Length: 100
Image 1 (spheres, rainbow, N blue to C red):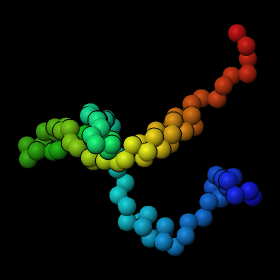
Image 2: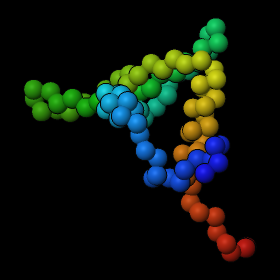
Image 3: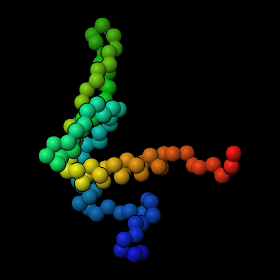
Image 4: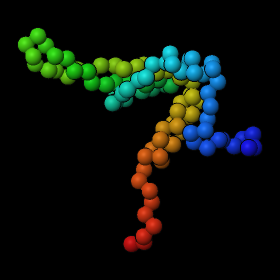
């Protein structure tokens, strides 16, 4: 395989170091990105989710809570945007072959 070519999906093997560090990394679930900005070349955004709470009387309430405060250099923001665009492309329905 040429040096700059990626292996087919599902055929990427992790090194032992990756397996260890990946197991320790948190999984972050977010439903909203309520704020974002840039300062001194560092992009930042806040990820938010909903947490449900059952009170002593049995009532259930939903609370907006911060899941993560993300800070990264702008070059990493660009890489993240490319990854998110890739996810959206994968999730898009296949193009129709029929012409209207």
